[in-house]
Length: 330
Image (cartoon, rainbow, N blue to C red; front, side, top):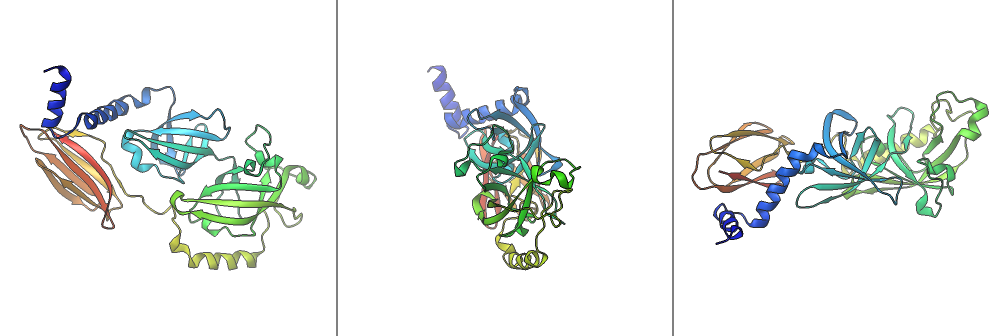
């Protein structure tokens, strides 16, 4: 019997296949060496500097705005479409994610402008007019070369929920010292003509059309466009009735379990945090003791055993199995 046959027999003995075992080993190697890569970055999620995540960063040579991120296997469940991540390179909006057997890859766009509304926090977004056939300058401020239309991607949350068709925004200089003499040179104004919510991507796609500035009403010092108060109030009341239909990323907790190991030795224990706290952790298999410490926290203890086995660990939320992983008990 050659080495491969011995390896295959061992895998069958512990209840895994050679391909499954290879994936487990590759994940372990990536977790161990992830920070040693030259493209490694420490980032934080949705502007929360306490909510950090490890990633690897790469450019797209064909697209000035598009970037790619790779995340550790143990962090794959934390990464969702529509999420903001911030590094020293800037703030990025994750537009699309793809999950391989090993790790999650994200396609993201750099946020090149802020949407500013009186009374609301600024929202970083990706503004682009290349969809309409205008290449523009090789600069992050493409709207300067606009063909009078603009496409914006922004996170769908409880702030952008309040945006409405017809709402005006100023785009231009970031300077805090703008005089009336600079207005026409420094600022342009766009209003929303279409607002679509992509449910699966947790993003708003806004289409805007260039419109006239309103000197005397627009706040050029702070970069805030004037909007008729009655229109704002009416729109907010209308949007509020549909609020429950919108995914609010800043408030919704994505199902997640903090399981970062793939094997557990007999006699060892580990704690697993789950989110939201109403979610249930289910463990199926032998030689494992599951204990619910409190809502949102479970403790797993491996029993001493002579024959290794794999147990299934899953997270159940709203009566659905949303996450499934395996642990080797040896």
